[in-house]
Amino acid sequence: MQAPGLPTMCVGKCTRILGPCLVALGVLSIAASVLLLFPSGTGRYLEEGHISKQAMQVPGVWGGGVIVLLAAAQISAVGWCSDRASRCGTCRNMFLSIVLSGLALLGSAACFTMSGLGLTDGPLCLHNQTGDLQWDYPFLSIETHSAQNYLYEPSLWTSVCIEPPNVVAWNVSFFSALLLVSAAEMVLASLQILNSFFGCLCGLCEGK
Image 1 (cartoon, rainbow, N blue to C red):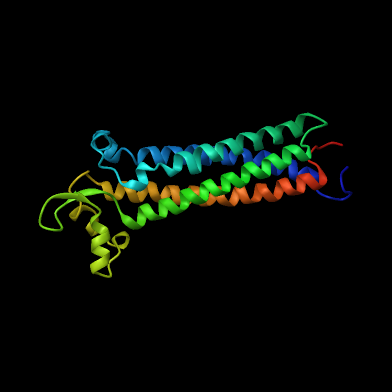
Image 2: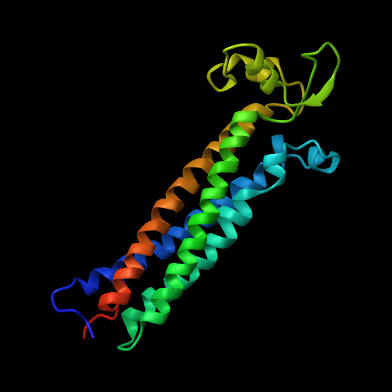
């Protein structure tokens, strides 16, 4: 039974908004994570194993992508069910939404953390900072021996890494995108946890 005066309609409408938003963010997360595997738009470096470890872990695919999409699918289904049926949005559905949204929150938080590490470490690239050409993370040693942060020194982006071409800008762009997307996913997943909690208390169906 609904508690009188509680904004039940807002619960259903919020669910129908949050679900599609999470779907869009999940797709963007997967796309950004996959593109990190193909610096300069080529698969050569992936085949050779010259991709940074954070990119190889594809956090945007499993953390900010698949897990979030599973939650988004369930959230969207419950939201549209409440708009069409008189008996839907039960406490069981809301509890499942809380669980899946919690998993989405954890997945997007993992994606956020690993993307931050990817930005901090910089890309794996061919460089000659030590006098010999080698594949390594040159920006880690640069920041160890100086106060420079490569993120604020765009002049280093093309002068340090020889291959892949423009790999620094590529990594910065897509890891930054993953940070923004996963941050938005964390906010929306948290909102859905609260929304589902209120749905358990006062119901979800409209037009009762």
